[in-house]
Image (tube, rainbow, N blue to C red; front, side, top):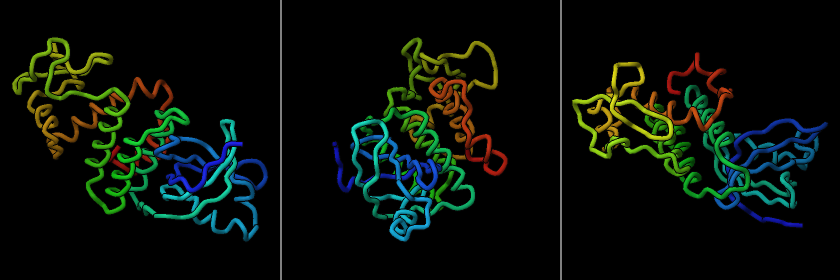
Length: 237
């Protein structure tokens, strides 16, 4: 039986399983996203007390498991680091976790995404600008998954973005010259600022709309639960 010892993982989500157990969604740089059964986690046993403390969303844990199938059996979980998210930062963290659960294939190693996720949680935990943190994560994730956006080139013609022109985003192509005004149009000046990493109050609204347009075909028709639940309380997503 395949067994892994002491792998660093982030806890993405926990849900009840059978009478006293739980399914724990984990994210590891070397094993990707996967699910373990934590037997007795929801019971009253003192032997699981340390597991219950460690296996909380956004915690970094050292995990051991075994199993050859899709569903692994948790053997041990040791707490390593807590990323404490409060208020709007918590809503943002739930949104980021759901993106990983929806966009990453199970058991697909994603070291670069692990680094991006760690950076995002660190920024959210210390109270850095929420919108900038989310946009950096979203565009970084798109890039790693092969759907990155080039903010400085018109994809249809290959010519450089012109500050005085307007552009729109087309799925499967990217940014192209806009033929008429619409809410999906982006100014060339803003796109060039984004190309230079210029996230500010003038560019963040456009960055948010552009990220949503780019993520939409990857997410399919199923809406994000975190948006539906927390949008009224958070303006960052």
